[in-house]
Image (cartoon, rainbow, N blue to C red; front, top):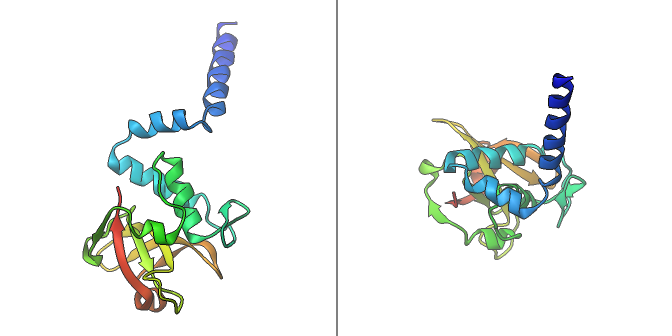
Length: 164
């Protein structure tokens, strides 16, 4: 009987915790206790949860997502407010050199012939000596991970920024 009571108590506590996951208060408290390294890891894990989501201009959920929507939702999950547009994200944090990028940093690309400084954004997921990977939502791929050294991305890279 004692084991059954423990199981019921555990399930009730679990249900209460899960029901509060959507509140900003719970997320903020959880995020506040995380180190910068833990926040970056949680950010990347959150972004990876969207892999396979199709591209949708202006989208920011599992049904469809654009590049800045992916960034916005991933940061929101760790209780960090960021702008919803690529243009707004270009003003966040501080500019860093390509040599210094780390997981969690923004990478910006100019993929359209427009006057904008950058038209696409992703989050660095892994940086080794000769390989840097980033997660983003591309118009033809949806949410996916790409290699910065690939010919297309290397050609269109503009700059990187660090917020965390």
